[in-house]
Length: 162
Image (tube, rainbow, N blue to C red; front, side):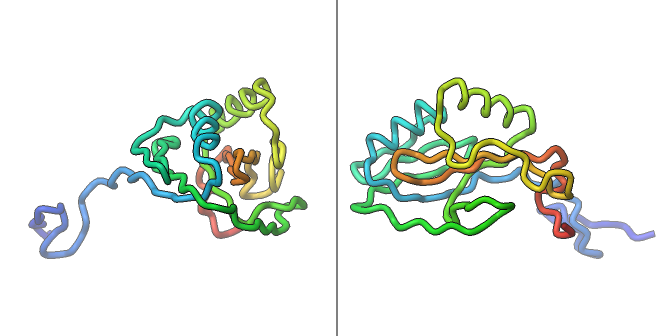
């Protein structure tokens, strides 16, 4: 029987087994362009419920579901390309969040109650297939597309077999 000798990172010096618990996920950072910072700020705060962080004349940091997204003022928005996904033209450049199933449905109801216009309305993509997911796209006032999606089974999020 081997006797483990852990280092300060909880890795055994003898066998190399890592006994450390999984580290909590750190927030990601995403920068995106906007051509009207004041209008973008209003949308991200009032429509999406983001709080703001550091603000400058040329940028604004938002807390987006625990992640850091930063709107950067640009003179002109980039041209948008789309690609076909499940019979819909999905913007190739978009960002969003994978939500819990119940939370996604609550947000969908909120968007509908607030008459938020959908770029791609709520539906189940890849229905009855592995990787099935609820999805919806909205557009911020500057033309950035945001996707909100949810999986009934989170193991499908990174599943490479479908």
